Length: 342
Image 1: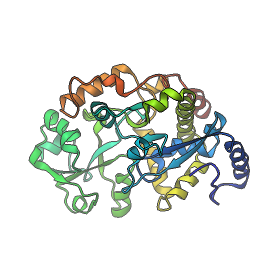
Image 2 (image 1 turned 30 degrees about the vertical axis):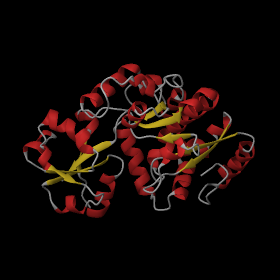
Image 3 (image 1 turned 135 degrees about the vertical axis):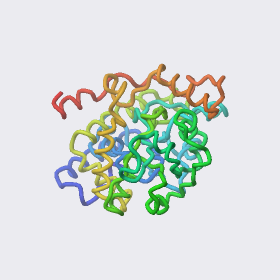
Image 4 (image 1 turned 60 degrees about the horizontal axis):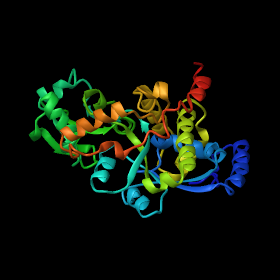
């Protein structure tokens, strides 16, 4: 999706403005950014800056290339078909470094992992009871080496109480003695829509699963050769997130639904509310340094946690997997102040 594609849902006045910016975009540098899943509110900052011309204003004609179950965006970036990729957390860049793959993280959109464990309403009084009540926790195959391992070590969860989550919530819905993984912005809404009841939600970032999430990955040679392009994209994304979370996101949501016709207004509204309620993007260091913030101190904590779990080698020179050159400049804080009255 580029700024030149205009869904009919975009208001006419805004469409005229976008058409004008599209003409300018033809003179800008093309930039292809791949997301790691289908278009959704969790990608809203990118779509916002395409829709309102923020990227174009600093010289980029950004094309968002949606991901999905059959799309390997990181591989496309390695092959030179994408200029940047929306990563998950730092495990992938750390492992890429260990394998000699020249990927570098230039920004982190989210200060917290959105991963949650859900339980039936009122089934447990606190998080610890998930273990003490011997609930079966349905997870994907990556969890035993990451967050579920943390829960085993710190909260008494049992390896034998882990079940397999096949991305079908029916087993969880049918049995109150089961818990299920999910994203705070997504599965709770789908379950409530299907059943009429809202699950209890336990954000794993509050229980030891620390880390940045929704990172911006690029190839090191590209970053070294194009620092102005990188800065434009990082700054534009930060501004986009503030405008998306706190301003008028109508045009961005129209672009999201154009790229993902199954996306609904209800899901988008729920996701935005969850992002704000749990401080997924705008919390911690981002409150003073701006969205996209990263620090050496927190990155060291993340690495210590991952290496302690055996996810990455303990002797890895982990600081080579990211750069602070393009972040921590307070970009967009003025936008937030103007929009929320701070």
